[in-house]
Length: 303
Image (cartoon, rainbow, N blue to C red; front, side, top):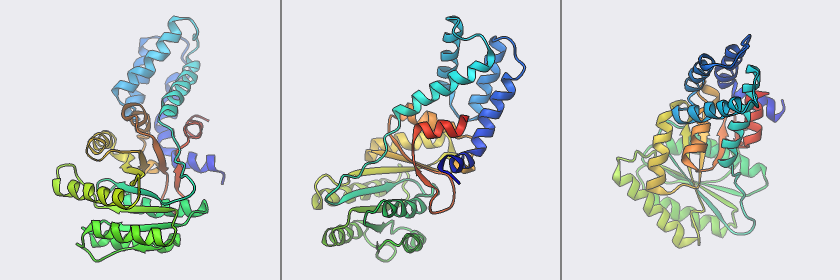
């Protein structure tokens, strides 16, 4: 199965929620009127595009109708596609790991977003690109997280630095940095405890890890990725805003897109947060983490 077909399959629920509903609204319509826009508004809100971007998309359509550039209802879909593509392009910035030297990536997020699983898939992705990878199990608050990452490290064929549960996460990070440097590793991926912004001690622990990384490797951590669960909609947006303020973010990984009809949240994340969406998760398999490509994403939704 080709990349686009696999992506279409992964976005099937959103395709049905958004596109099929839009098609059913437009089918048989001969005039563009307020009633038609009201129906389109309902479809966009249901797909979790959000009030602001729903209004934005509708206004774009209305502008073209007023300018008489658009007179047939079925052409509204083209405007929708072009405008969504425009929004997503501003949020697209694929990760490029520079050659030479150690590149460090810290992965953060609350429990239940698929963070540890995503790290395993990310390790596999980098290895497939020909890079040497090391994983660090710095989520020591949950023994299950260490065990889970151990399983994924074996699946990806990537070594793992770990300690026992409740060990100092900063000590794990320190050991991982020493191992990465002595073995000339290309990419170090650091798992962290599932944090809620209200848990001050966990946020402080995160900052301590960042300080140690910066001390041992100039510019580290080079990336801080937040893993968000697409099925949580508005909650994902709130989490991203809080983590961005607390930890600083360089990218977002959006998981579980295959499990939701509300994939329209991608539009809100790209437009509202101005933080690049680096990867999307569209399934359970080790190959189901994809670099986010805005053109490919729009094609999978509309074509």
